[in-house]
Image (cartoon, rainbow, N blue to C red; front, side, top):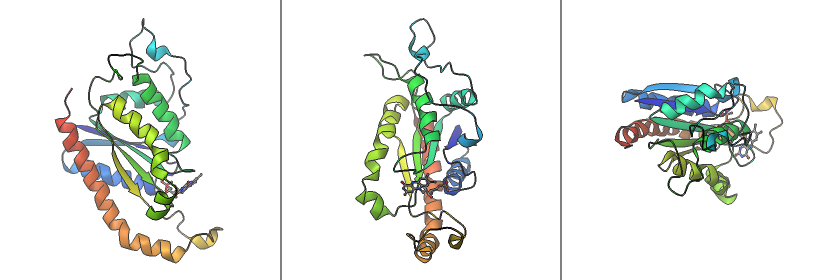
Length: 220
Ligand SMILES: Cc1cc2nc3c(=O)[nH]c(=O)nc-3n(C[C@H](O)[C@H](O)[C@H](O)COP(=O)(O)O)c2cc1C
């Protein structure tokens, strides 16, 4: 059992990475081999629309673009479960995560009446999001609607609906006094963190465990 986490944050030790590593800890606690890949340490770009992956005379499911993402795409396809972690940037996943998902999903997606995906198995997945917004703000601005497209394609292409995890009201800086951040109350943020962080970490841990259990029962 192999679980891969994809960190779509440029911060390798930020909020997203912290929750992803906790989820991987949960996965490891029930026997999974785990790995976290930091997208922002790689050089790659999004889909270039060459359609090689859909050519009838080629093997479907392979992205022909050769860059740092090539081995990562292969690893994800071989994995038993995958976690996609991203901070929310302007109400969406980061451009790095978006470019990665374009390459992963489009190379597996097929314009066929018979099957939507050439993956050939169910790959349990989870989207893990971290954001400044409070839960109430996320609801007020319909954040979940802007996240729906990639989640929907994940369900179609990976063969099973992704799990979802949200960490709201994250701490962006260690020391708020060093930055112009008067729209936030540092005290409120720290109080929220104090109250909820441990519980959120535990939820991420459980998410990792659940993915492994789902991965063990996923059928080809
Ligand atoms: C360019 C940029 C855009 C952002 N846009 C949003 C946003 O639209 N909504 C939000 O709630 N937080 C937004 N944030 C805050 C981050 O989502 C939040 O701090 C996140 O937890 C950072 O994760 P990290 O520590 O893993 O990098 C933005 C941050 C940056 C740098």
